[in-house]
Every structure is written in structure tokens, then in C-alpha cells.
Image (cartoon, rainbow, N blue to C red; front, side, top):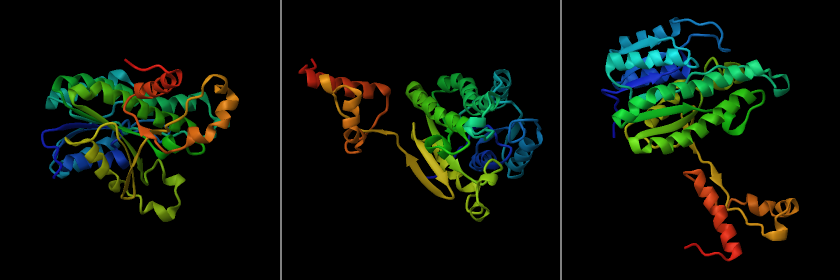
Length: 306
């Protein structure tokens, strides 16, 4: 199987450098027309410049591809709307959205300011939401769409000093879960990439000895699969240094505490059974969890479903 993006139109946010640039180049190399979005600001979101996005566009054009740059701030609904409108005007469609833009304002939670919190959440979570809202009607009308959210091991597992970043990165997984359900009937598939790479966002956090192994180009193959025609949906793909794994959010089988046992002490006494991994399940919707517990309660009460 050869994955191709001929006649597809892709938008990649934060594509002026690092992972976003590699994603844009990878899409273009396989035939996609690419909107290269980058606000061009500093790592903390300050400033702004069109140069990084234009550099990526030049690289795509040098390889014979089609691309244009757009400096929209992903947290600005009007600017993002203009970006999508230009893509549709020039190329007639939007098939792929890669929500990659991000900033960092790392600080221990005891020293975190609300301004630092809101700035990071605005780009990572609200920005991904605004961009997805802008392309959603076009994808629904075409009965085709591929969207990728960008998470992080910090969001899934935690990392000191990144409470704002981690909260936003876990939130996009929740957004993916709902959009997977709502987009299914229109063939809109949505996944999450949790990458690790030596970029300007991570260089200060990584030992120099391993940065050479963590080339952003080793992540992009995973991204390209997640936006391909035969992509899965609702998957969390972790990718670092050429290694790929899937994170699964499982729920343990759990227990039912009846009558006098349904107390805090009862929960404490049953904690090992509650936490046991045997019989854990992968759910596709929140209602499955509800029905599990209701089923337990019905069985304990001697109620048989009709």
C-alpha cells in the first residue's frame, strides 16, 4: 500500500519550523497542496513574523509542490476563517487539518500566573478548536475529512512545570473523542498524535546526548498515516525517535458496593479490586461506562433487563 495525497488540500498550523514544517513537507512530497500556517512568534507566543511560514513554502515549491503561507493566529476566529476561506477559494476544498501550533510558558504551579495558563490553553486547546470549527462544515459537505490533534506525553502522563501545557494537551484528547463520534457519519476521522522531537520547544528540556536521535522527521510518518484515506479514528499515536506506540485509555472492570458497603470505608477496602486490570475494557463512548455500572446495580438488585 502506498499512501498518497494527490488532489488533497491540507492545512498545517505551526508549520514554520520543527514538527509542523516536517509535516507540511511530508504531505507536499506525497502530492498534497498545503496551507502553511505560522504566526511566527516566539516560543512564548510573543511577537510575530511571516518569515518562518514563507521559508517552508519555499521549500515545498522547490520540490515542485504547491503551497501558500498564512500567518493567522490560531486563537483568532476571524483570522482562521480567512485562512480556510483562501484555501477553499484557491483549491476548492479542505481535506486535512493538522492542529500542530503551540507555545510554552513553563512554570511550577505554585508560580504559575493566570496569564501564563490562559495563553497556553488559548493556543493549544482553543486554537485547535477554532481551526477545527472552521474546516468542519467543508468536511461535512464533502463527506470526507482527516483531522489530527497534537497531544504530548506531558498531557497523558504529566511533567513538572507544565500544568498549563499538560491540561491543554489532555483536553484535546477529550475533544477528539467527541468529534470522532459526531464526525463518523460524514467520514471525518480524527486522531491524536503525541510526538517527541528535538525542536525549539524541547531543546532546553532534553540532554544533548539524545537530541540527535529525536529528529522531527522520524515523527512525520505517523502523522501521514493518521491523515491518510485509510486512517483509523480516535487513536492516540505516540511517536518519538522512530518509535511508535498507541496509548489506550482503559477502564477496569470495577466492583459494585451494595447497601452498607457503599461507604468511603467500603471503597477503601475494595481499592485493590477496583484497580485490578483484569477485565479492563476500551470504551468508544461514555454511555458504555454508565451502562456497565447500571448493569452491576441491576444485577445486585435482582432486576432483569427487558
